[in-house]
Length: 196
Image 1 (cartoon, rainbow, N blue to C red):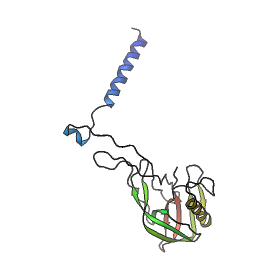
Image 2 (image 1 turned 180 degrees about the vertical axis):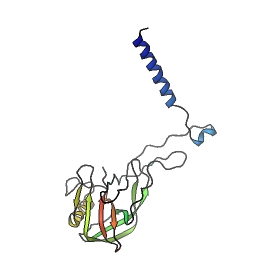
Image 3 (image 1 turned 90 degrees about the horizontal axis):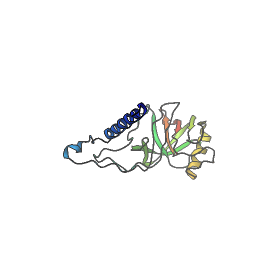
Image 4 (image 1 turned 60 degrees about the vertical axis):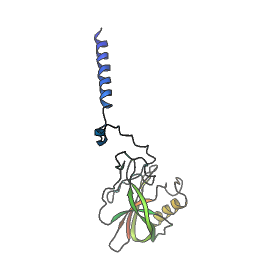
């Protein structure tokens, strides 16, 4: 056997050994009972992550939470948002918005495949915009865009009227935002969470 054939044979044996090692036993707690653990059901969607502060980097959101769960009962995927700075929270915009006020629902974390999802909960709430409110629009199909209150309201209203619209003032995402609220309860800044 030539040297190159021996190297090839050695490489094939090593590859097979690594492949078998990867198929080793499951380390789950069910193993002691002598039963194999079933695999999780396939995921159905992917949702979101928390932006930081002024430079905010929202992640995808608004997709359905996944349906699969591991057999040990623990939730699968990303289920808890990173804490936001004081005065900030996740919201889901619900109705048409003016350049002076915002209508929204609070959100709760939900498990997602790629990131944490934010599900709208509770009654509609209204918050006034501060006169100096800043909007930060984010999309997976367009460059980020910083806007004033009028353009923020225009974008929100277009996306409520036609969710998923990619041709309006700015491409629509999920309607999930992080908002900064001052001591008087006014919205001073909003970061859109992009989703595909």
